[in-house]
Amino acid sequence: MDSSLLQLSHPLSTRSTFLNVIRKSSSASSISIGRNSQFQRYFKLESSRARGDVAFDEAAFEADRSRLDAEAEKSMAEASIRATEGAPADDPKAWKWVIRKRIWDLMESQNVAANPRPVHHRIPNFVGAMEAANRLCDLEVFRDAQCVKVNPDSPQKGVRLLTLTGGKKLLTPQPRLRTGFFSIVESGMLTPATINEACTSVGVAKYGKPIGLDEKIKVDLIVIGSVAVDPRTGARLGKGEGFAELEYGMLRYMGAIDDSTLIVTSVHDCQLVDDFPVEKLLVHDVPVDIVCTPKQVILTNTKIPKPQGIYWEMLSPEKLSQVRILRELKRRIERETGQPLPCGPSEKLPPTAQRSSKPTRRASSKN
Image 1 (tube, one colour):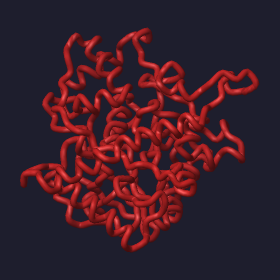
Image 2: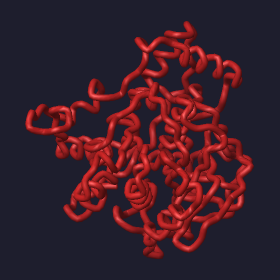
Image 3: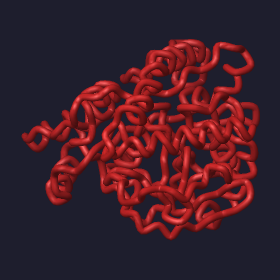
């Protein structure tokens, strides 16, 4: 993550006080992310349906997601250009864009990229993603896990499938946290005909149970997508939006995870790099403990500290306005503590790539 979170300006003791006060607040002030949120726009009344008398409007969900992605494509390209061509030598983000572009270009040139293509400005799908997923799911920590948090991107679809077919709870965020918060999907909610669909972004919105920040859950394992990973240190790069870090921070806030919760990523072997300037990582950057590729499993034994929560002084006004759950959480903390939370400097956000308008590509882009 780089564009949305920045440096810590309040000591941990202050942030911990904020969190403790909120955890003691009454249920009347709790935040609920469910049918009363933006998420409800994709549901319509239909008394013949068994699921709460509502039916999911898949076309509306897909249209909205495609529209948001399309609006974002231009500014993502602009962000990468600004960071690599006009940035000062000490810019903490420029090196990340250089590595991202190198990996995206390499995957396309070696034809190890998989649909949706091109893989630029995405968590890239890759040839052998299912083999990497199988290696990940052979891990003892996965076999023992009851609840697994998995990112919604294409290369981790196999992990989501194996989580559900393994009888585990799947916790996954709505893409970019724009249409909801986290959702829980369980195999008991599904049929053999719907379990594969439930592993897509549309399927999670359709079949998952939306949860809020007061949900009492324990996440046993985190699976995260990556553009590049240093197997020696556990340092990792996403596509630059910072949502993986926000999701991690919110799970820390909820008490669902702690420092002992292992973080795993699945990537192609060509996404392994050895030139990460680890000393330039920021406090919010999430390291990984285990890397799974189609060919190997790597224990990084990372020494990089894991983030302790949400770093408000690293959130730009633009990012805050984009993510409803963060705005509600910020208001909640400020109301309960009587103190304003800091905010980061204004910036243009790096968005996700546009989905292809071709039918075959659109079908393959359902994560």
